[in-house]
Image (cartoon, rainbow, N blue to C red):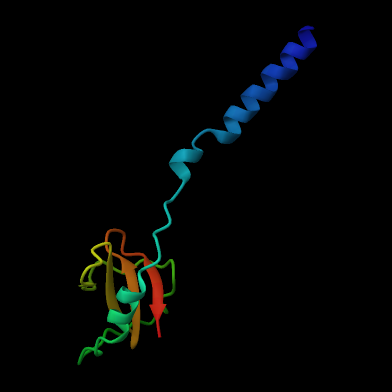
Length: 102
């Protein structure tokens, strides 16, 4: 009986250790931008002096703070930026690239 109690206790402690902090570790994945937001970004003309970076930015990368993000009308959660002649849709709050627009 005591062995069963210790085994049960060990399982409970192990489960608590494994699952401790998982809620805090979850990073919310932003919803993909709407088709309307993507179309808006795709139709924007390239700026006369586009930003050039040596690093290739991809989905999941964070846009540097010194780059100006442009708002997307009717999509306040998103913004966009031109980098290396590429349009990038980013999460306006975190500055993380969500989508590359061809």
